[in-house]
Image (cartoon, rainbow, N blue to C red; front, side, top):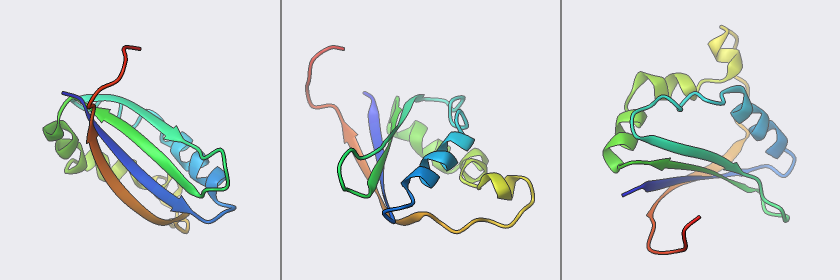
Length: 108
């Protein structure tokens, strides 16, 4: 059963575009991980400042294996850090990790 992990990241009102830029800079970094099924970055369309990072995994073990892998740490380093530069300031004010499985719906 697919496990859905949602990282709800709250940013300062003027930091959303920077968050999107940083995710774009590491696009595909998780694609090759065993059990990984998909990724979406969800931008709010109202005055909210919480963005959602939605990933889908074949099972909880696959997600945990990725979180505990060297690839996770490398993928979460900034573009600057990967090139030997100092890390930029965080854009996230806070974040929460939510975990879900589908409980119903309709076929795509």
